[in-house]
Amino acid sequence: MYKIIAEHPDFIVVDKAAGVNFHDEGDIGSGLFSQVKDMVKSQVKGMVKNQVKSQDKKQPQNQDDNVELYPVHRLDKMTSGLVIFAKTLACAQTFGQLFKDHDIEKYYLAISDKKPSKKQGLIKGDMGKSRRGMFKLLRTMDNPAITQFFSYSIPNKQRLYLLKPHSGKTHQLRVALASIGAPIVGDPLYYSTSPADRGYLHAFALRFSYLGEAFEFTSLPTKGEFYLDPQVNEQLLAIKKPWQLNWPRL
Image (cartoon, rainbow, N blue to C red; front, top):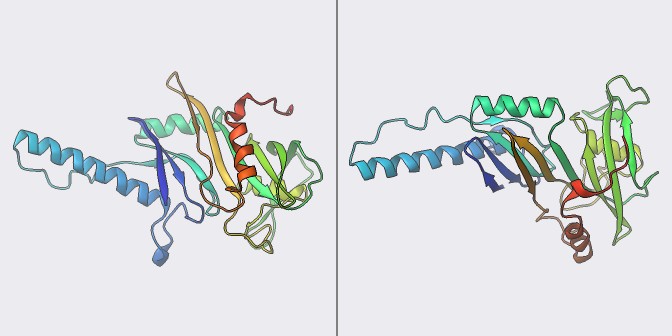
């Protein structure tokens, strides 16, 4: 369901699997947040047991009841990739400000099998509610969603997209690509007719500074027949550090 990418005293970075909801889904099962919090609790419980054993003392009861974990951003159910969780309230507040100030660089990978109206550049506009929980890109610019992107030709008449959002709107990237005629393969809302083994959107990289220390994380997708195609994988490996590319001007 997830893989640990990095663990810091104040936060943890995990790679979420596609098809996993962020929050619990009732009888369907635990969401990503609950799963990661349970893992952190188990870690704390194990540490306490080892400390008690080494000191030959009785283990305190409910020692993990006060374990905290704070979600600082989220991914859609269909989206795989990097997610940060804060371990303290102070850390969560710091990340909240970083996201608010757009001081965290985020990069995503997507695949579409439709010909786009443009192959790279900027997608910008306000987002409005549509039908069935969907959104649409508007022509107005009062509080616009902003996305820079490159695209690359890949096998099966598809295109691979490298996306850099500069805002955090609901469904922003899914709507952005749909707006240029290139909905994401496997997207159950914006391209429900596309046969695919998953929704092809992946949170690929994060870059930020936390308390004066610079951090960079990347994680390539590990599931999805189109992502794992040898030619696509070769293109993905060539990207490596997306922040070094010459991005289209805002």
